[in-house]
Amino acid sequence: MDMKNSLRVTSLSLLLCIIGFTSVLARPATFLQDFRVTWSDSHIRQLQGGSSIQLILDQNSGCGFASKYQYLFGRVSMKIKLIPGDSAGTVTAFYMNSDTDNVRDELDFEFLGNRSGQPYTVQTNVYAHGKGDREQRVNLWFDPAADYHTYSIFWNHHHVVFSIDDVPIRVYKNNEAKGVPFPKFQPMGVYSTLWEADDWATRGGLEKIDWSKAPFYAYYKDFDIEGCAVPGPANCASNPTNWWEGPAYQQLDAVQARKYRWARVNHMIYDYCTDKSRYPVPPPECRDGI
Ligand SMILES: *[C@@H]1O[C@H](CO)[C@@H](O)[C@H](O)[C@H]1NC(C)=O
Image: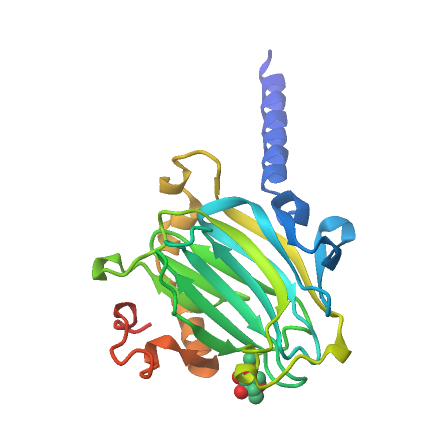
């Protein structure tokens, strides 16, 4: 082979290689690539060839879906458009769960509906080794039913970060050095549900669901999971070259830290860390500030 030909072959294989990679990394995926319906097939509709879905809540049923695999570390994100108008009494949840009752690890986003014109509340919670009771709440600074917004859970050996449109709203640091459990031993599945919970969701249960407004619809798209799938290669989760373990991801950078502070100062309405009636002595993970 002469020089020119071999160059051509090299660039051709390089091109094929790039095409190959992009197809492997082609994200976001369709719903059915990564998920399955777990509750009420008739209440989850696939739209646009399965690249987005519609969740339905009516008087007969809510619905839910789950990932086919579990994951250990990584980042899960999706775009969600919540129920518009009067959504009081409805709860839309997006969470990860280890499915191990006694030593459950769980990372929760719960979107609590409200009366028309009143802000949606986002409640987050973290369970580590079976212990939860770490609720925080923020009121959203935009109308989450007018457009899609990105909700993500990022998780590595150093911290768990809940973000909305790249604004961190919650960071749960690895405080194992202080004896605080950190979810790092168990893979978690990704779940979502839409259901009625008007006994507690809106203004502590005072506002009831208005069934005359049913059916209620929420929309999801741009499903993106990057992480160590289980079952999968056993050494993946401890591989320091996974992008989510990189130096840039071991703590919030200056821009993220500024956004995080902005969200806490302006939009946080409840933090278990400062709830003296529940915790006269703040839990250890709350003691070093944010
Ligand atoms: C609903 O709106 C009320 C009044 O603005 C507010 O106090 C509350 O935090 C909102 N969210 C929920 C889930 O009740």
